[in-house]
Length: 262
Image 1 (cartoon, one colour):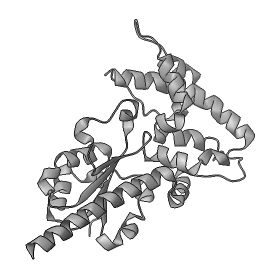
Image 2: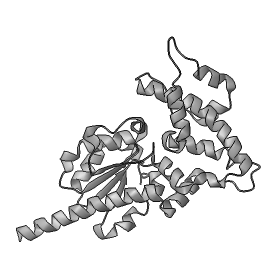
Image 3: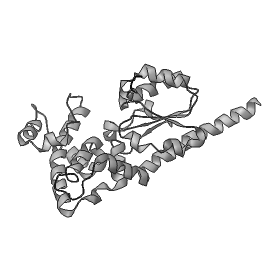
Image 4: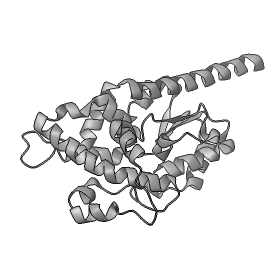
């Protein structure tokens, strides 16, 4: 008997085919940390028989959304990270009731805010965190600026690679030709880093100060996300509220259709 396939290994075609055969209201998530965040969704919407389907990434989620006409008879909602659209706006074709985006860069950002995770830092740890954050954002703002300008590059570099090698950081901050450093973007990101710094970078940056070897109590990011999701702060609650509104409206419409057919 083969092992269960990871969502990452399942193609968009296979996932769309699965939805075509389904009769259950479905919540599609990217996967990864979403599994921890939305584990209570099936219980919350148990009366609807909701199924939660992680699909293995944002790109696949949006590709499935683009093909929603192929399973239009099925009640399907999507929750996606805002990603770089946090710096601009969501394209018109993705502004729909069934597609819910995070407030910050990603779901990790929303939970970071909801959970007030930095309260776990001591005064000394917070000072060290702030110092590293400034260095990291100095690189991150430049990387984001380049991405927004359509210049190939990485914004997913782990904080360790930026902060533990001064030569590497210096090299990554080297401007090309007539390139100008995006100081305004740097100030904007640093002023609201909980929203703008990619969550999968922000959490490891925090973990550098919450999980070092000599620390009396060490944490890991998934346990902190779990605590924050169970606490259900305002940003996560907003997502659940929008899901409830979406599925409730569809339920009313279905009952109305049934009444008319009778």
